[in-house]
Image (cartoon, rainbow, N blue to C red; front, side, top):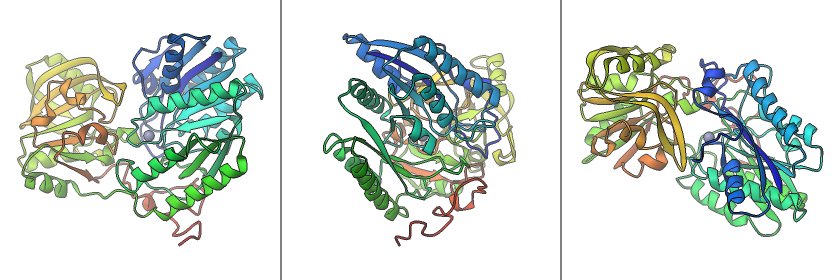
Length: 487
Ligand SMILES: [Zn+2]
């Protein structure tokens, strides 16, 4: 069995001020063909699954192409997208003939001139391999599943969990389905139901937790190969954005369509119960200070780099300073210039630093303070599930008793080692502020006595009814009250 694999991704917030060029990819994750490290990364589920099979023996022949992905940001520049896309297509051409192609993609990447990068890439892959070779991709659950993606792929497998703790599991699933199909054991066909809704719904809570369990229970019988719910990316202003149910069956299109519709109606009826509640920063600090015991974890979701925000806002740090809270840590705060100053000062250095709030008015005002550099780490990283996620060079500083992680490669908070690798123990703090919307939850909920999500100024207001969409197809809830007419 000969397979080709590669990874390319960015989650595009079309409202973000952060242009996504070469630095956004190469500064985040970039591995030339064959040089992907041994540890899994966010989009390398299929590559890891193929490596595992090859290692375990059998007649596996795996060709690895380019792997690169950027932290969520604004629109990807045309030159960079075309260069990476064409590199992968060239590597595939050179690898031919193959039995199947298994890509690791995001599914919500927009480049200048390309509203649906993954649809474009899959179409070109199909042109190279022809109609018989099986083509599939693992997708982020926040993808915007388009007609083109479904048309040109045989099978797509999005993550089921948010936070995304199942990247490797889904990669294994994708490779298994593709391998079976390539051997002629199955004939995967996809059914999609468009739920005409947008929200944000973690799967760690009910009723989503049970919904995911119901989807999983349907798999592996009655010809059902895979069932997923696409949660879409609500800051991606493209026509086909929205929640969708995707069912992959073994050549049972009609049954797949019926199942997708049933599950789609089910989630649509739950749409008002699956979102999240938010506090203001001051309300969140009040709750944390009133808690008998820490650490209380407060999520600054409006400044979530994972959603395309700058991750450099100072609203939280300022509020903590103003209220005299000393026993707190905050991270990651993106400020490459401040990081350089900290490296110049060295560990133990005490100096006057201006940091934060460089990207736009939503970030607030920069902070000018006497800081102490407590730890410096070159090429720092944090873990996200089994994956290792780079955060660039990082500096831990202390200001007014608040420990802050400054970093040079924009990223959101995923793992506790965001702090511990920088010598900060979040378990000993009363308040832990994480710049993340939801992905922090898997790791941080384990140490938290309470978790509160906040809303603050920023490009991710999280009130979808107020997002100024121009390209999105209507009607869609909550912009329109009942698009499916089921109320
Ligand atoms: Zn996601």
